[in-house]
Image (cartoon, rainbow, N blue to C red; front, side, top):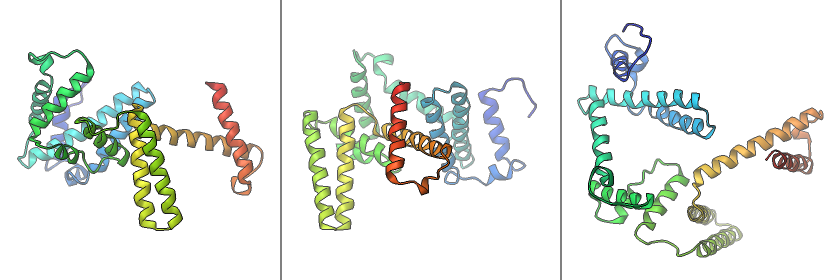
Length: 266
């Protein structure tokens, strides 16, 4: 392929075809749908990271990397005579038109919530689901646990299987916490694991009622923890100390100092 000043989507498809051809790249030719799954996951999270950091240049690059993974999978499928990239695009276009009857049909909606309700109903018909259990089971098991719990709870709530108010949700959180503490007293490890899972599930439900995505909330908290830990360690180093030689009380004082610094900056 000749070098060009500006490439197009069709060029990307052709480059992928060349890389996978008999005289193409040994690494690209060796790959399978399974072998490049880690790449797909990694690129997806890098797109999310670019969005969270509001880094427009990184977002442009990471979207390209993610698009490459999609084209890669489509190319392998075409080689196996399963489907082509054109069929992938045709399928998503038809799905978008079908699931937006308020735009491409005669259905009338007034709010974003009504759009989502229509979307889910159309999806059930489209997928041939006859029960809500089938809908719950359709949430992929490979999702991160917090995300899967959140989506399962939302889908159960669609047919009214939900708490009436947030006070009841808080009571459930307290109930699950107490059951976990009781299991700890008993010392039954399998029971502890079970009750801990129940407690986490109730916390996810609490997040849903607060309209918080628990996956993102925990990601933000983990990042905050790292930043505060960095402050503690850097401050200790500046004082000629090593963390492993400090007491927990000394480290905790620096931790509280880092929190005060955050408040001052905000």
